Image 1 (cartoon, rainbow, N blue to C red):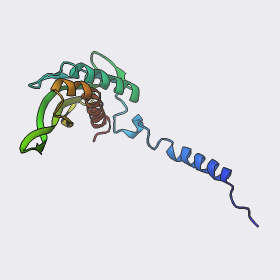
Image 2: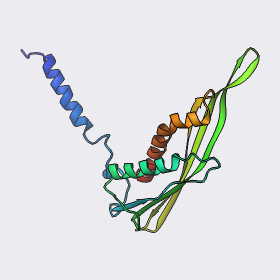
Image 3: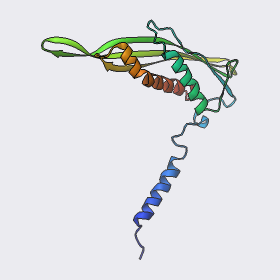
Length: 175
């Protein structure tokens, strides 16, 4: 008669299954991109702010984080001159709108504001003399009790993280 699996055996089996099932499935590597394997260098240019309203921290922070992400998550070498892959862009929208209102004692008040940030990206594959462009836009809600300066201070990390991820995914995963 066969003995049933012990709890320890089940745990060991589960851990081993989890480890092998997870190997490479969720990790990002150049193998999972549609990137030309001949591309070895990249130049991420300064992402200028051409929006009507300029947050002085957004462009330098976004540029730096994008460079870091490309360096950490690809095998491309960052250059400041000619590169196989040239990434340029600019902030083309930075605007605040009212998205929520509340009513108390017969008075209507703004309760939620939305900061929308848009970026235009231009990618040139110099090996193939091919250029692609795309726009991304993200909205970030904040309480109407906060000033725009307070909201920007609270939202900067989230804005940069989301924009960087979106740009990176569009450039390297061809989404």
